[in-house]
Image 1: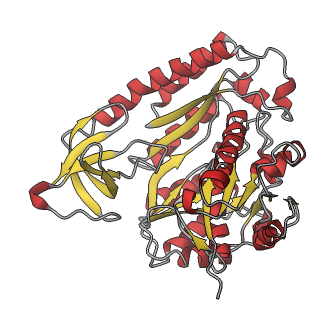
Image 2: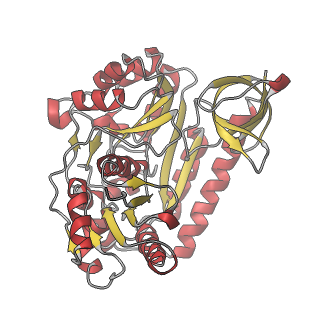
Image 3: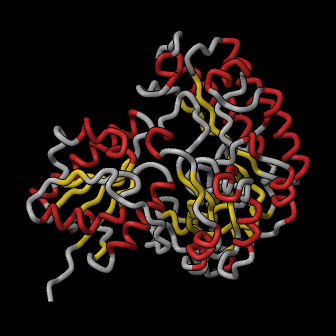
Length: 441
């Protein structure tokens, strides 16, 4: 019997891409031996992001770096999948000769066939050839105590700066019964994180109405799911039903990630974003009043075409008034193929970067003030593992999502045994603008 070839996957970009990579691994593991040691892999898959120019550059550089393992490692075949080939295969196929086979965002069911054809000497372009089956099996790449669940794909929002609709297509929800089965198959999960391009729009296409709360309730009924976190909740779809669910469902973490992107009504209109300065402040007020101690985070774009100094000051004032627990800020990236690419009054990179820096400075002070309130208090922390550099354990409180928020660094009191994935009561002794520090009681 022939020994299975070793397969390694590098997943770039967002956690939605990570879910795709985990499904690919599950489909491939019967035929290949999965390895985390890329230098040992005979087949490497680079699952790519193409949202921004910087992401496309990273994807191409990663593929070229991996191709070197054909000379210095054991690599035999290099496959590129995901958003980059889906959107740019015509520009990629001829020059990127380091890659043996290409697949798009919905072609993972063709993976085994693509690899076989590559081993027969063919250079394969299989973009758009898959049937996009919703594989319910996953080979988790996260720590075992938390997992992402992608509940929908594509996007209908048509923000003028965004390439996602042209890459992923129209918004479509995965059937509820499939998502329940997928979640059940994940095993014991302390934290299930729901993701999509727009989580709050779940079910509109399938059921003729939003069905996120119904999905949350069904997931909450699963014995293997301890808690549920929501990411990417568009502001225009956050309604009273969701606020009530956040308030009353003990399994639903009191946390929302709401991509607002700006606060100037004029800029939001050019972005084709639903909502305005007043409606955003009203929503934040309703959430804070309706869900005590809710943690809110958001993302904002600085330097969008035509953003005046007045527009920028409106955004700064909004950040100060909203007092979000955390926020990310990005300089506008001019992406060819988007409506915003053609807008007049494009802003210089120097100005965009200065504005991002100023926004981070403002939010840093707010976050520092918010976190300082926890000093001397006891918070429940889930242990994510050990930080060997700091020589302590590292975990997260309910107001911290993996990878995008801060952490809690803590030591064990009285020789207590600390296990990854378990929750501990940690007394906070010190805070800064991003993290908390303490020890277990």
